[in-house]
Amino acid sequence: MSTTIEIKDLEKKRIQLIKELLNSRLIIPGSFNEVYRKCGKQNCWCHDKAGHLLRRITWSENGHSKTKAIPEKDIVWIKKATGNYREFRKKRKEIQKLDKSFKELLDAYEKETIKKSRQLRDYL
Image 1 (cartoon, rainbow, N blue to C red):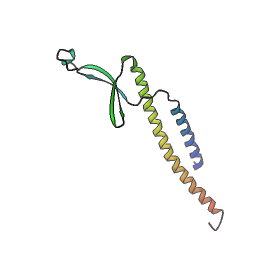
Image 2: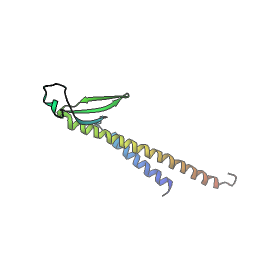
Image 3: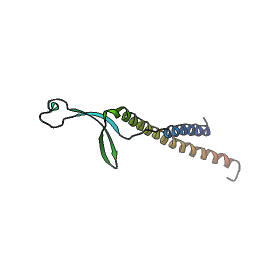
Image 4: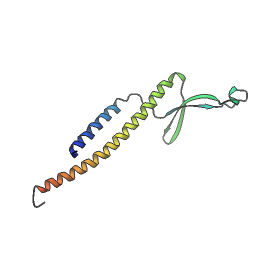
C-alpha cells in the first residue's frame, strides 16, 4: 500500500475517533466498586460478619486519592459514567497511537518525495 493511501486511511480513523470522543456527554473519572466494611460498633450485626455494603467511587485528583459514597439510586448512572470514561481514555490512546503512526508515515512520505524531486534534476 502506498504511503499516501496509508496516511489518508489513518486520517479517516482519527477523524472517526475524534467524532466519537466529542459525542461523549457523560463521563466521570474513577472506579466504581462495592466493598464491605465493619462500622466498629461492638453491638452491631456486622461485628461478627463481613460488614456493611458500601458503594463508592474512587478517583485521583491532584495526586490524591478521593472516595465518595454513591447513593443506591445513582448506581446505574455512575457505572455508565465511569464506563464511558474508560472508553473515552481508550479512544484517546488509540488517537495517540495513530498520531505516532501518522508522523512516521509523513516522515517516510517526505523522504520519498524528496528523493523523487531530486531525480528530476541531475545537479541535486
